[in-house]
Image (tube, rainbow, N blue to C red; front, side, top):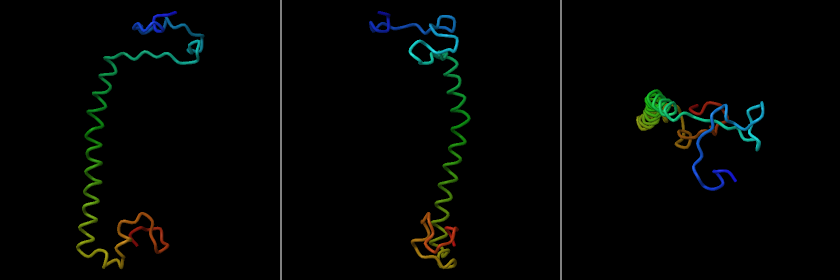
Length: 102
């Protein structure tokens, strides 16, 4: 019985300590990987710093787009384009064309 079956904490194995074949797979078919906690933390911080502002701008653009469509509809866009109220928010046009605004 090894330490893991006894409920004891197990130290992560380094590449030289793996009990695996030449293909990198352990005896039960699972791949053993060790992720350095400091490298993982640096990666998470880097992803947060790069992705959070980009995602914020994407959501802001989507919000402004929805708000502008609503404002344009209340300003008379639906009457100018001869649209019914059901065609404004419809993903699939009811008049057979491929354009959702037409």
